[in-house]
Length: 78
Image (cartoon, rainbow, N blue to C red; front, top):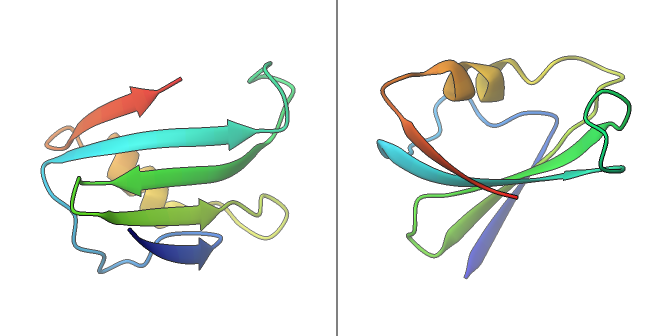
């Protein structure tokens, strides 16, 4: 498996499909209190995209845009 690591956000021109799998890591189990620190994306092509979230600098605009896109089916792991 290939791993692509991104700091802060995914690239604007990342090529994904209409169905992606997502997993996230937080600093605890309370989403209102505990910070999001890592998001993992895959389309099942043996490539894992890891996004290390840095909430101090800026919001991950491209990741947010991807998550809001209703044309992309998202499968979340919890």
